[in-house]
Image (cartoon, rainbow, N blue to C red; front, side, top):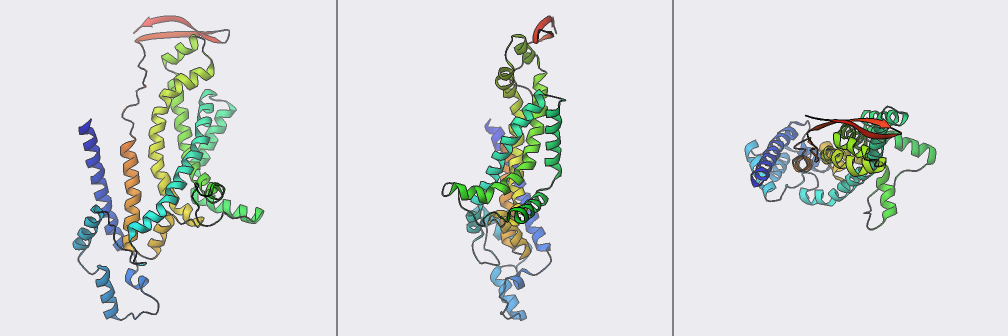
Amino acid sequence: MLNYIAQRVVLALLVLLMVSIGVFSIVRMLPGDAVILSLDEFSSLTPEALAEARKELGIDRPFINQYGTWIWGVVRGDLGQSLVTRRSVTSELTSRVILTLHLAVMAMIIGLIIAIPIGILSAVRQDTAADYGGRLFAIMGLSLPDFWMAVVAITFLTIVFQWFPPRGFEPIWIDPWKNIQQLGLPALIIGSRFSAVVMRMTRSSLLEVLREDYIRTAWSKGLGERTVIMRHAMKNALIPVVTVIGQQFSLLIGGTVIVEFIFLLPGVGSLTLDAVFLRDYTMIQGAVLFFATVMVFMNRTVTDKSRQPVYDGSRLRVDYKKVDGKWLIDYITPI
């Protein structure tokens, strides 16, 4: 067990190291001069002033030296200083990460409330109108991009109801109603794709479990549908679903970038886009490393090592027949 945990920790650190090298290299390929964008419009743009500004920001040194200084600061918990605001990147991210995590968790809760019941209904009523409706919902959720739904929702609410979600952010433990007004619609939009993925996994996993012998045995005992589905089938069907939820949560964090920008929410996503527009190298590096850390942590923590069900069952083949609406054992064959 300890060897397994150590192996996963080492692999996660290697992935983050590669991400840090990649983002540190790519941001310096962006067009534009971060020094010019960071200077005040009334500042002198003489070559001497630009050279002095580059020296002050530490971007006049060789690439290796810059990366070594930055990564050593990351190890010590210091992500550097913003080239634009001159504030600590760590403090900027800390002040905004609460909103981003809040939005992602709310989107996940909304998605689960929608996805799990639809997935169960779609599996239990396979090839019926309910199943077709659930599969259509999943296809739409996977096909429609978040930014498109956000723009359409804002346009519709503004034109028809003359209403726009309140700007800013109020934590739910301070003002729950205002928090729902601010984050409810963005969370619903972000959670739509999440719910589509979870719904499809719930349906396919439950259909697979419902074909197992021990489920047929439960039917043959005369157990009710709710007992068979919720007490016996869902225990094993949720194993791959939980894995998908963990993997998709990291994508929810990444999906907040555009939605936060569209709804004017002061989260990590909007901070990242602003940093890209202003060529704020250190802020981009810190934000991307934050997103990468969340994704690596979730993917390494929630992993489906086996698709085998918890119940192994007996080495018998059991055939059934339906009599008066109940499944009864027809005959048993050793295998």
